[in-house]
Image (cartoon, rainbow, N blue to C red; front, side):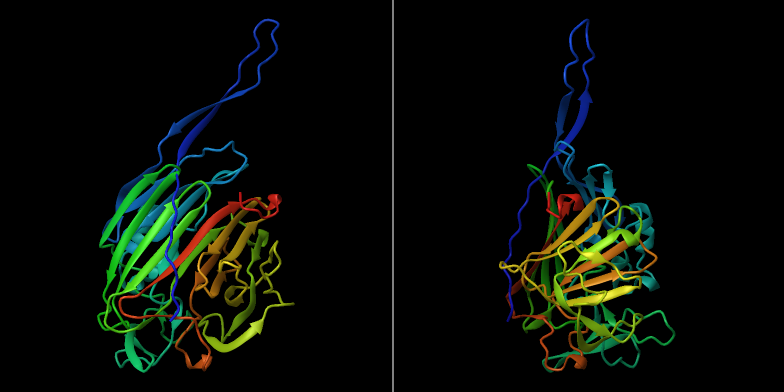
Length: 412
């Protein structure tokens, strides 16, 4: 059984800066400009509208530095939608405040996330912001039940029906189970706290399998905002009576501030990508393709441009640091902007990258498992679902940092 440690750190703060220039008096020389700093406390508040039947959590802090380094400013979270990280804002030198994720207004989101026919199983949650995916990430294929409402997934001789909630856009595209149980989940409890340099939020979910997964789970999600990092932790405990496979991912849509995909540079330390049948179904064939020497080679430390085609790629055989962490960088060279997504557990074995050619975002998903992890196409390969025994736990953890490419990719 694979298992990971749980840890999470927090800091925080808020500041407003105004420059006061002293005018020369008589024959005196002009005094240098002085900076007046007014400190306001960080905050963690609940705001309207309700989404998923619960108020929205907003963690806030104000810029405290001298304006020469990036800083995180806010994080907006949806406890009524599986703790979707709806938006993150940051201060970037030369640009001011930027929105990091692709999301509408909260008012529009309340209408969009409507639990209607197109929102089956919370599907619309993974079309904006940053949804947390549990207990599996991406697609699972299998035989359909007679009513075509469920996919039959088999693991270690046990079969469960998973909600068939997704398919490609082409006529006749096969139904699949997509992205797990968290998408429309309402928190059983949640709380917030301010710290010296930001704020934190915690939400707890009691997820019952009800015959549609291999076990019940208690899931706790911690989100922490500081000047230097946004950190997200998902800790899951198997509360059922049998072992289960677990996959976790975070489905973040990262905006390019310049609005131009051609300005993107991507660094992914992976040796392979998974071949797929097409980019509508996006089903893995079971074949791994080397990235070296191809347009999908993003191993250079400074990154590489995206190919001028739709990307929906699963990058595998990651090069982990000595401590097990994995760093992926997305930069916007025209905006002198960079975000580093760090998987803080060696259990993350895959990064999924999705980027349509006509959009100004790149979705980057650190996840445990291969896509279609129970699929026959993988043969005897380990697809990196983590086995969790009854009463045992597993932790997924990742963080964001900001940097300026002109500073040679170093996190500020």
